[in-house]
Amino acid sequence: MFSDVRLPTAETQEQFMAVRRDESRLAPAVSALVRSLGLGDERVERFADGSLPVYSVGDRHVLKLYPEVYLPEEYDTELTVLRAVEGRLPIPTPRVLGAEHLDGWSYILMTRLRGESLAVAWPRIPRDNRLELAAAVGETLAALHSVSSPEVGAVVKPPDWDAFLRARREACVAHHRADGLDEAWLAQIPDFLDSVELPPSTPVLLHTEVMREHLRVVRDGDGWRLSGLFDFEPAMRGAREYEFASVGLFFSCGEPEILRRLLLAYGYRECDLGEELSRRLLAYALLHRYSSLAWYLTRMPAPPRPTLDCLAAHWWAL
Image 1 (tube, one colour):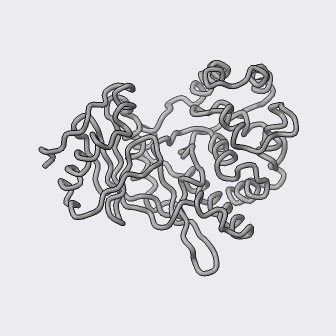
Image 2 (cartoon, one colour):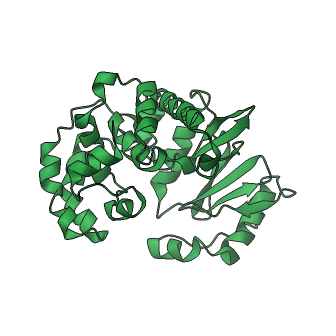
Image 3 (tube, one colour):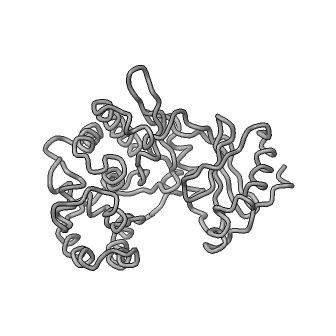
């Protein structure tokens, strides 16, 4: 079936980085794969964003590639989670149509979600409608965090959440120093983390990168509604509040009303929304496996004072 598909070698990080944007090497193999899947008449086009090669195949399909040796867990995680959440969230998610290992890579063929990126549509959406969308995201995350299955428990990492957090904490300063964070901020991290209590939590299924870019919306009459959530490749099992690190940075983007509406729709009470929660969410943002405080400081509203306490109150204002 796939005899004429020859994907480039990507067994190491260096090999993958060399080919992941090289369409002169990827495109012929992707075209052959699409033909083998019986979709040869469809137009194939690479999406500009994303860390992995992802292609639209006509108007109804998406093809995503994963280097099998270099990033083996991303394929297993996304495939498992997409199958687990199908039909169980208030908004659509991509439906798996096919998935295989092939020539040192893996692929998932999935349905394409309707609508446009929320990041693109956001400036055109009125304030009240934005609040409605925030509530819908909160309800969606509550449903996601209730999804459980033996497959999710077996495949989606980490197996020990407390050990994961301890490791992230031990490496936190070094992680941010390597990322280019100024020493004045680095010096505050140990004391800030020591001052924040992260209560024990039963691990739940997390998306971990809920942002406007990973949500789709459609115009519905006079307003906008969510039409999909995608990109479950970075999904994890962990504390519920770890989810809201990316939400505060990439969905509400420092807008207090948006974050409050989302958290209330999720299930928080008014009395839960205060300084302690804001500090916990910043702590999870610092400990996040993809954290980049140096970058966040370039894209988020500047705090009134250059302290982590001010960041917590400013970026996760409640």
